[in-house]
Length: 433
Image 1 (cartoon, rainbow, N blue to C red):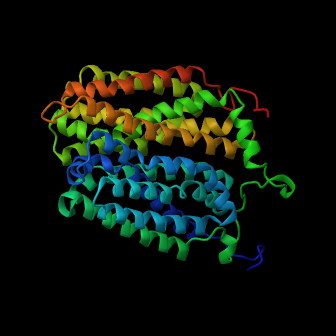
Image 2 (tube, rainbow, N blue to C red; image 1 turned 60 degrees about the vertical axis):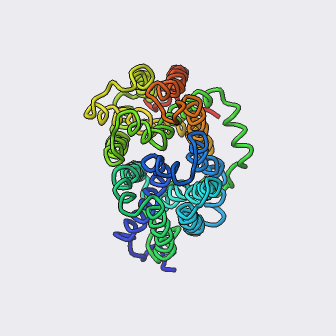
Image 3 (cartoon, helix red, strand yellow; image 1 turned 120 degrees about the vertical axis):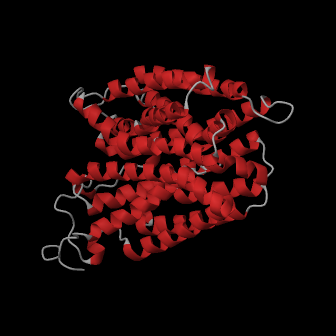
């Protein structure tokens, strides 16, 4: 290895590392939300009803949520490069298995494996970025990474609808599985855990290590400290209910609702749902900037939660009331205040605790968005099943009844936002252990 005093800077190579990992994050979001546009095709092909389809959609979230804390441990022991490669190979193979599934049970099993496979991208990527980029660059790169996730939602909407029209839903997932495997190979070949492994100099201002090289507190002790803090639970509840709405609608039931209630084609429904991606790309940096501008995380989170309460009202009481142009605007706003807003939520979770506990806090709070999706997707499927007409159809009233779950969730999220602890540095004293 070259001496750090004479080693050349990473220069453009660090952007190759970031690009490959960002494409991986794009695929994470694609796999997460892809069932929505092709849900009706899968239900017909797999002879799956609404309740079973809800479990199929949620099968991704349980392993993803469960892996968020172990992801940090694996990143430290295996290293990000090996962790991402191994798990992305699993995700690609499982996507292919999903495309080949001949029963709903096999499809659910494959989705569980997909969720497990892609669960090891975000945390290892963050760890890699701490070694390849300066402290002053890290927040910007994290924001770009979240925006790239929005591109994954975009591809899982209208483009997937057109791809499935050409290849069928099975062919689409076979192709995406192959692409995931190719990307895993590229990450293994080109990505390294640190620039020093390739003879590059480290960043001028790498993120600070623990003083004196002292080992980090044990995972169980850190988890216990976070769970015992009363200020943690309102934010966890806010994440559960807010993100549960987003993952349930954009990730699964939005497509069938737009097709069956509004009579949109699969491509038109995908176009409406693609506005969720546009909101993520534009909204995440804007809302983060707004929370800095206002010197308040809490005010922005309360505003978003109040907006969500208003946005779910048409679903519950006027399920056919919006024109197609308004559907585009509505879906944009829904994503803005239920998905883009999480950039502020994660910033708040990091600021709730001292630096030594911030990683554990973020990992723990990251469980709750996916638990929300895992609960709400099958819950709505079960309610929709109860509301089916004798001919097997779903009326607007059946969807409106199911969407009352969103109204209750939005109300709880709003109450939770009022109970949040203000964390903006300019607005409160430094967090104490």
